[in-house]
Length: 126
Image (tube, rainbow, N blue to C red; front, top):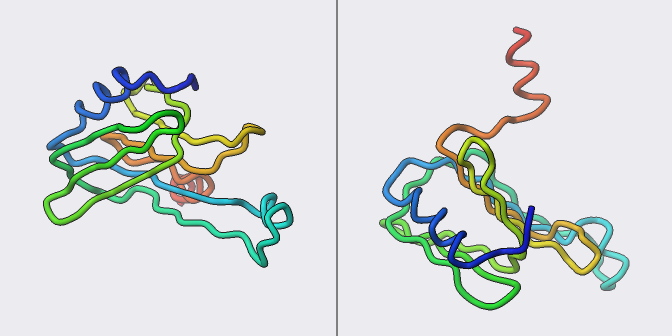
């Protein structure tokens, strides 16, 4: 991954507008952060392979950045993004890393479903 270039990320986002897109979105402070901030527990939100369609996409802010995806009936929003990559399959991977390089937020878009790791391997065996 490389530091976000706003123009490159905006162009990559726009390539998904109006299409059915598989979304991976997660945010976490992770178990590693609970003791540092005096939190009684770690918190996380996670969705994998949510099939969405959005009519507008926008990256905004200054490092860290935020991305909003406007759907017909609502918004998908991620904040704290620092890095990006467009992989060889045309998937857009956005991530927010803290000062120690740990993942805090991820927003990823693909035209094909994201692998489910062990679950995909079990499915293939059956």
